[in-house]
Image (cartoon, rainbow, N blue to C red; front, top):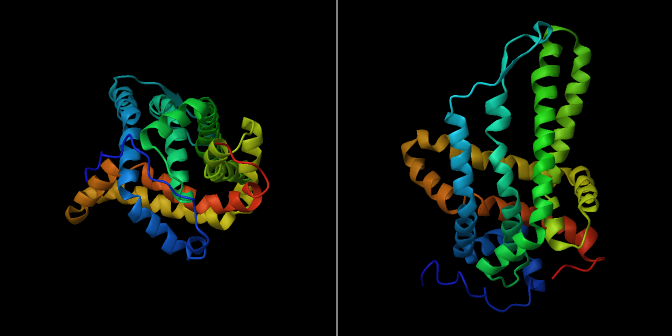
Length: 280
């Protein structure tokens, strides 16, 4: 059967997760769903690539433009030049991808729930319903990235080395805040596509889960770091180049989305889903 034959068809009827399936160990369920939905994951990834490719191309154009926007750090902070263009302008087009993460999250969440899904229609429906809040989250993350990266990495770090160890206190605060925001992103997309919540309500719950489910969050972070590190380093090794290319083209975004939702969803199920009605 063709890979694209189900782009406009339902994933098939189904009651959702059966009791005997839930009782299976999590790794068994993860790979069972992964193998059964592999073609659907590829389809979702290819749909996500429709906006992804032009956005990355725009970022590449900005990167290669002969623009120079630098800032000289104070001598007390170690001096040196800070490339503001490369750090803060080149990533700016990535904000345009934020709304489309809603479609990818909704589709892969349904895979985790083992619910039927129309890949094409449900993807764009989720973008239409949740795109604004996802874009708002993208803007907030960009501002947080700009502030924390400048103040934490390039300012307090330098002052800690050259001036006083007391600067390590705000540096640690920046690192901790960045980690909380990162961990919150494992739950916020799920919250936005699953519940009727205001944006700040969803963010508050996501931050609570970021602190309370530390073990899961650390596991997600380590696995994702290894995954993208492999994609980044694999081209240097001939025997892994083909695998990295296949993952990059067919599963670059959908596989991490499925993994994050698989690990994070039980937390939502335990603390929210059993006491609050779901969105349709």
